[in-house]
Image (cartoon, rainbow, N blue to C red; front, side, top):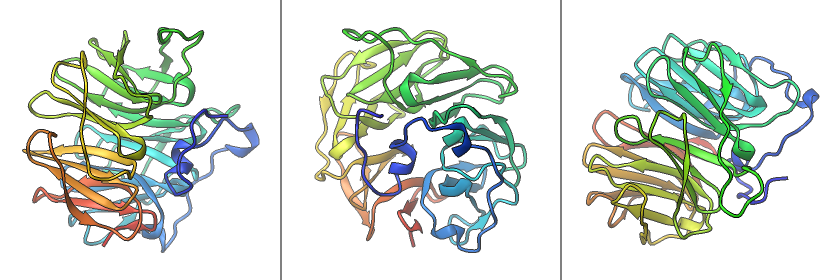
Length: 315
């Protein structure tokens, strides 16, 4: 049983699952659904000029016109929730989610192949990140962290050090994001941020002073670290995580995603707010408001953001 309880909305299917029996996670292909654009998307990113979103039921949505229209991927080998997606160029990408599934595409998300799944226990992944076409990580439930150096053909488990005062490493790892050079960070539950200086080979824990579960994070172009999550908690560090200060968002809605585009930073919230900062994360204002919880965002080519809500693509 996970130690923190997420909302009952669509995001809960990604972050609120525990390990389940093997007969619940046998992979089947996602069905083609004319209403797929109404499903909850849990992550989205750009693949060149295309926007790729992943979510419930293994649905993958593609848009080649900055979100004006959506179409479903032709072939996805799993039908359970995909929680995270990462592309290294316009063609190559990976997605991960429930069933311990990691899937791979070489054609911009049109078709996908299964690279990894756990047929014995559904220990879901909450985040996948690839620095380049060979080097990647997938993180999830109870400090699950896998690494690959061959583009996902093989995966090895990374053993994390024990957090201070704990008998085992069993924190839920919710978002992998890059720093500068070979740095990587992971936003995790209980106010924890993990840091690696060597592409994920070794890790240490950064104390934030908070106990709030941190669902997302980013490093700004100026090198500032921002992490955010439960009940609108946001923390900011200008010294690589040595110290942190809280940031007022003006909302208690939990922050689902943080992303940067040019000089602007964007955040989506479960209260339906799309927030924007133009001063390196010091202050935030509402850029838009949706009628339901926002679960994912992706940059449009003009610098604005496309958002995804509980009912799918936000108009």
